[in-house]
Amino acid sequence: MEQSHWQPSRQSATPLHMQITQYIRDKIVGGEWPVGTRIPSQRKLAEAFKVNRSTVVTALDELTAAGMLEGCKGGGTRVVNHTWGALAATPPTNWNDYVKSGIHRPNLPAVQEINRAEFHPGVIRLGTGELSPELLPHLEMSNVLRRVADRTPPLGYGEPMGDLRLRELLAARLQKLGIAASPASVLIVSGALQALQLISVGLLEPGSAVLVERPSYLYSVPVFQSAGMKLRGVPMDENGLRADLVGAYARQYNASLLYTIPTFHNPSGTIMSEARRGQLMEVTEAGGLPVIEDDVYRDLWLDAPPPRPLKARDASGNVLYLGSLSKTVSPGLRIGWIAGPQPVLERLADIKMQSDYGSSTLSQQAAAEWLGSGMYEQHMERIRERLRERRAVMLNSLDRHFAGIASWKVPAGGFYVWLKLHAPLPARTLFDQALRRNILINPGHLYDRDANQHIRLSYAFASLDDMERSLAQLAEIIESILS
Image (tube, rainbow, N blue to C red; front, side, top):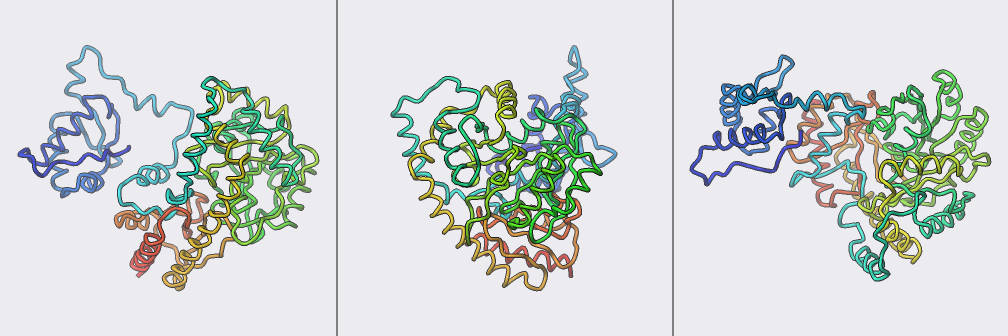
């Protein structure tokens, strides 16, 4: 449950516990917290309201006595609202039953907590996988949007495959990467995540197995699981996905496709070697195993341009290639693309029209302006330079504070350092203690349930000062837990 930024007023003549009681009562009576809702713990409420825990306990006791709350056997407190519900002609709708009945799985509780905490004032986001606001091209985007507006932008729906000019520009860029693409073989989507959602419901049967790297970003978002698919992890090494194991895993699980991030992998930062890419393509083509290549980090190389995409080696249309501007220009623009066989893209475009009737025409025109004007290349040169600086700051901090407690590899691009602690410790304890000091981390178990000794760190989001200070504090927290 998302907590409000509301806090009781210490200047008010009304006692703090009575203000909190009225606040929660209003949430219940107004229907925001319906029957069955589990309210935050006493500790979290006390932290959110900036009061003593005893003040929260007094407020909750009054609401419990009034019949609006009750304790649960498994811990926690839920809304029961017997008092006004009993007086109503009919009992209030139990929305909690509806919430549990929805076919789309919720995010992992830890992911939900991270999503909420990211927007708490003062929180330092050490794991966020996006560019810092100070790196986003605010002035350039304003100019782009102004030029789009001067051309009398279209305000109606767009064509199913997306803006033609944008697809032409993307096809030309893909051809420079060695990918045989025409505008007809490019579909515009609202970010790479929507591409995965379309694929999950449009190309796969419920119960299908999807092979992924282990660890993998896909374990942290239930996009395939919500459509009834099962994720099966294939081990990685320093050269990327173990291609020599893919055939056996595909046969064992009767896999329907393989999802991979070969370039600056999320979360490990690994870049798949040239030899491994060739081996993987041979294995998947021989076994008739389709591949989703997620290449959203490609342009974020810091040391040298990465190897050609898997799609550039694809002579049989076996690879669906995903790209996006979310990691490089703006996550708020919501522009991504899929390149692949036309019949597949037409199927996905039809499903997309059923769900949102096409991506924003304004965003598509802005993206076309970025790519067609040369601004994108200039922007990426600046971003790479800034990310190199940020990577250096993080690596220096790790050398100073983590040399005795963890190991890591230097990423050649992307956003992430995959930190491995030398000794296991309770992930929940570490997460909670870090958050109490306004440090938000992404624990490794989000990406692999067995990666309890790992933390995904990002050098892309937090300011340099915040990064250095919070890493020093995080090391202190880890050492105190281990001691």
